[in-house]
Length: 472
Image (tube, rainbow, N blue to C red; front, side, top):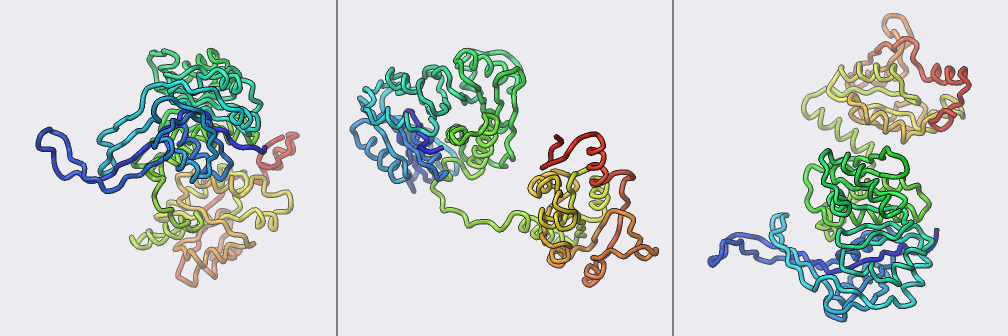
């Protein structure tokens, strides 16, 4: 869908003053901060717009700015980030938040600017950009902008999907909004829910209550390291856990904005609400892992090497440095079954790490025919790496794993099946190669009656047809 993502909400100027603390003030028991750097960035709805623009999309921000130095600085920062600003007149002063930081910790926050200040009427340009929006994100920071009657009417009548990121001091979402995105603490305040129970039970109970009360399509409750719970029609919530939890969280400021902006963009592109929430959880988790708002001004890291090669080869190097034994096995692993798992578990017990050499989709088609693989290689990699017995996966495009084996040079090469080698059966085709560096070749037995071909045959006999990883 064409058109910009339009962010509507209260913007403010954030300033991070970072320094060092080496002494205590002589006239009060407080630390003395020696300033080293000061960085200005958009905050509130301005941060939501900034994060959305970083995703290489057209972004417009409808906000209220005062005619002061703080408002001018905020408009400058947004313009530099590629955000088109559609200002409404703000009486009083533009809000500013100053955080004093040392050693990765915030020592004090100083707020400037008045409390909630109602803006003037939106100019025609604001109403026009709302009518052209691909999606609308209302980023409410409780300062009065989204209470403006004309603006609320335009939001209620918008044809684009509306995502409402609420504030406990702000108004209800407009009826018919596609998604509301409170965090758990905000949800409790918005609903008055003080009931006991786990975070998930509270999110489910209060999320459904907010959805009914506000008459919105769905409520996604963000729960920090527990991901998000999506409350929609029906009583069972969809729980979306984060893909990973960082060992150390430096700064979570802006994680909710990243979540809401990503969800709005996905809905604007036609995604289902469940798909949008999944993408939002992944984006917010990556943002926090990268340092949050504190990481916005770091030098960009160099692009990493391809993940599979880096993981496998670095793992092998580390195991060898410790004097360990590297084990590898290979195959298509098209429809993962109990026989595969038994083989992989047996292989892992033979050494200190297990690398799976996986046939790519093209390689599988060449070996098995045009109807295979049933599951694409990305899904097969994900399933294999989810197993505790698999330490890394390397995908190869050739008919045989010879090239990837020559790179890995495993100490033990394992295959499942009835190869007998020295006992009189056929020699494994990779044996000569593995023996060149002194590696051993072993086989482990299959579980009787388990095979991908047998699984597909049984499905056909039952009247099922397997396509793209699904039975239809």
